Length: 344
Image (cartoon, rainbow, N blue to C red; front, side, top):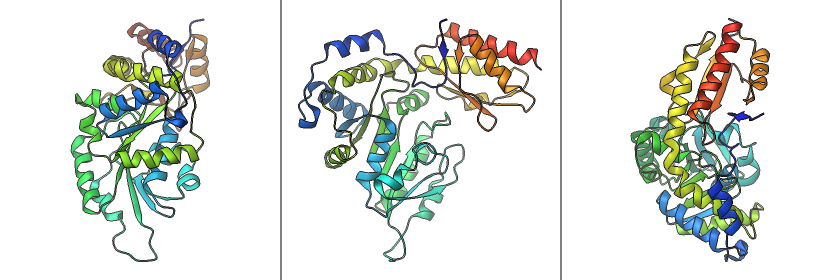
């Protein structure tokens, strides 16, 4: 059976060009700083993300936590959204690795009000208070929405008024730029550091980048070693990252179009609530009615050769990527239609 996997955009196989690049990669010992392929990836990533330097790290989770460790002192406070990835899906790493306290703000579908951020910044030197060490934003948000540039710009102004750095969880920042129709640097200009995943929509088999100033990355390189991320002949996994940046970043609009097409089909089905305007990147989120037999639906998907994550708290997510074609979208929609219509 040819499986169609829509659980995430992390499930993709490397492209043929990536496999060729891995085979031919020139390598060295990256801990010594002499892996030329890693160096090429880091230079390319820094340039594309609009930063002075970049560092190749194993995962996005690793990159975010390394950013917190590098920006903050132990006991600092980090301001971020209550629904962001760092809070929900990074296993409390901020407390363990950086030793920081997270101060969350209620977000409006992933958007943080800059006024709410400013109200929570610790002002003065009261010895009872933690120091505000960092503000974290996420764009695109893990709910699939893209944060407007004017909100990011105002957040930057707030941060500058109080001399607080900004870190951007840009796991899917190239998706965000595709939706906004802008160069990715128009987003990253508002952050002191940015983490970008190569292994999500860009389809590399492993790895992420952390980018920022040269001094920041020099300090982060030491932190990467401390966290166990000092890799050796890493060029074999950096090589597909170069292909991801050069080739795959330019085709994300296809994934977005497929997501919108799927959303249009699903929105018309009984038992499905879906806001089509919320489908801004390659994620389709929808709520299933309580009357839907979720077990039967998941069985129907599996029987049809579809790998999908079950709903969580009533919400289900389907993600498109380079291995999901327009024909696959129609096939997937047909499976949902048959399962939900038969049981309506």
